[in-house]
Each structure stands twice: as structure tokens, then as C-alpha cells.
Length: 148
Image 1 (cartoon, rainbow, N blue to C red):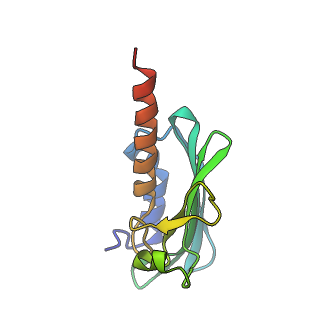
Image 2 (cartoon, rainbow, N blue to C red):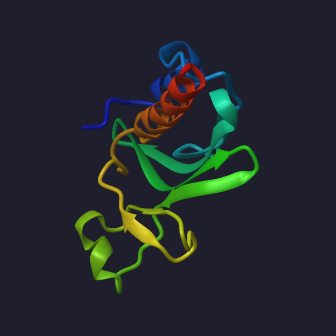
């Protein structure tokens, strides 16, 4: 169930992400209204160890709910794109049917190697799942840094 009943609530959520998730070092996310019933989310979240997420969402809001119509999220480690999520349908890929159209591109052939993304949705925010993914990666690196 979507926790946002208005675009204003979604904007408040986006603009307070850094306070909600202490792992975020910097946020440039902005919500750009595009008429009475649509908006775009774009920008970047930066984390420790050179990790960042770039985010693009096309939003619509009507009848009291905010819906993500499409999205693209890229995960970067320094200058390397390590994965990305998108909602581009691939109906001819049976391995993605379980979460159609949500999927993640991963190495080794990041453009063509896709896996289901059960943690993505059009009906609720996707950013918490992505932030958790980055938090796990940075925690591993921090633990390695602290080993004797």
C-alpha cells in the first residue's frame, strides 16, 4: 500500500531522506512538478566509500495516491556503474516474469544480464530498498577497513 496520499507528502519524504537514513552523506534529489497530475524525481544520493545512487522517477498523482509510472536507478561505486534497476518491460525474458517489469542489471554483462527485482514497485517508494543495499555494501567495506 502506498504511504503517500499527496505529492506534497512524497516531496516531504524525499527532502528528509538524509535525516531518515544516516548512511546518506549527500542528497541532490529534487521533485519537479510537471502539471497538475505529474512530476519527476531526479538526482543523486551519495554514501561512504564512493557509493552513490542516481534516481529518475516519473510520478503521477490522482485520486489521493502517488504512483511511480516508471523509474531508473543506477548504483555507482566511484566511477564504475555496478548495477541498475529499471522498469522497461522485457516480456520475452521468462526469467524476469516473476517481477515483470521490475528487474536489475548486474555484471558480468551488465547491459544484458538481468535478474528479477522483487524489491521494486510502482505503488510504494523504492529508495529504501536501494539505500539498504548500499548500506550493506558500505558496511562490508567498513568492516574490512577495521580488520587488523
